[in-house]
Image (tube, rainbow, N blue to C red; front, side, top):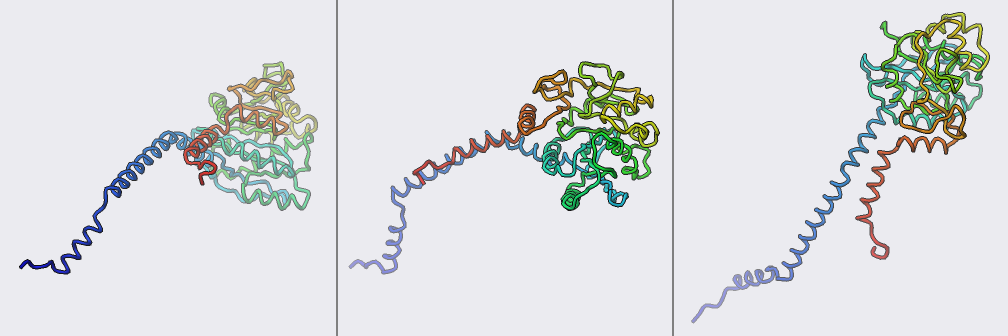
Length: 358
């Protein structure tokens, strides 16, 4: 008589039959695996196609984050003293060109200053240390004292001059003549705090890299640089440089502070008066005419205008947003971000869910 299977053996056999995958289960598993591998391949190909744009965006972001480094203390006009001197926030080599650009503006121009911080904060000139400062006279209103103080606390890029706000009655003289005292901290170094100092209008767009490159071969003493007036002239020794943005070497800044020539002649169109100081003081044996790398915005056309072109250092008379946008677009200021944005939009097209398929 055969022995019947034990109950435990029957249970094990039953479990094996239950857990053994069917052909349909195996087929579904294989199809799922193939689909998953295909999905990974598609994702990898998309990432590879967009990787260069992502790297470019990253480089632009890092460069922009380190480009703008306001460091200079403002003049405390309330008591005639200077606020504590801060050390430079950006390391520079001894061979770097050091430039201070003072943008003469008004205390109430908050939006313009914020906009210009974006403009210059996204530029990263190689081999140059360029500080951008906003310059205006004494604060006269309570809201100015609060809001400007917040700007100084946040950006430390404002110089307040001890003067009454004006355009052609000595503001430019006060700006230049105050700088040696503001920057007299130098730590005992025989090197000037800046090689060059520029006065610029707040409706001028300056391409910092181009400015630095144009200055590299030039002397660092007794230099007067800018756009020669009158507009048809190309001789920098005849008249003076336009107020859109002119630059002098540091030794001339110290001369303006010490000389009696500027003190006796303060009123009149500030750029013309400045040129007369240079003439009467027999200064600036080195002069550089940056025309037509500096020019007025092309519309409306005049003898002082020029079409936007790649060799530009500065564009003047950007009086409204339309002119600023056209200028920034021409020079591809946001090009790296736009490339990345396009990559993002293309990327999301692959994964967007069609309407009605949610």
